[in-house]
Image (tube, rainbow, N blue to C red; front, side):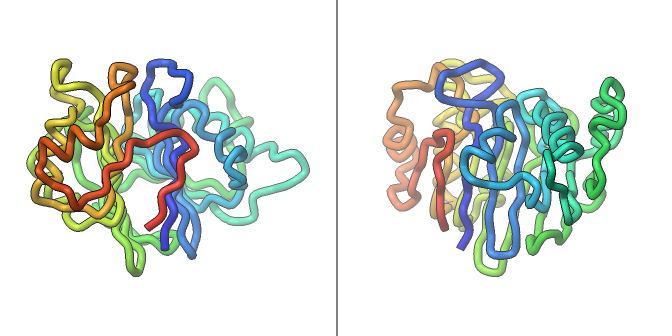
Length: 252
């Protein structure tokens, strides 16, 4: 069994119910955070998760709504108020991540250089860490943006991060137990680097994931029945379509 906790289902645009991107994947062997947008760290505590026991953080790209809580996470790990981290936290990102983190640290110096933290660029497309097999794939968003395919012994979870549609997403999503993807904008506002209901419908028409979780929702998506809209567009009535909400838990 795996559990996915939504820490942030929104975007860079302030929203009363949606924070910036962040998802916690909990398995029997540990936990991993995918993206670390603003508000992510305090929501961990709100859901009862000790930030000091997270094994890995995986970043999809460098936009602030996916990375801005890295500084609070590092600062809190450096000064954990009478406690300490007792195992290594590994923080992973795409090409350029080492330089990106170093520049983030420049204004704060040793305040955000805690023990038991390693910063890595994902040089290979597949790695094993924290009981997970993690494979990356290139996305259509920024020059270095990537998504993640995560496998445990029995489950497949996919997290696209921000991306525009490209045909390879069908293969990535194929038979996933949980497929977390953006559905940022309505079709009337389509742009190349974000997806719409028609795009997500195209993906699941052939890939048939068990659960599709719609994330990175701009305010213009409020009030829409996205589940029924995508089912109607795709003709797929087997996939469970879930519109992500902050603090929601999804189990597979």
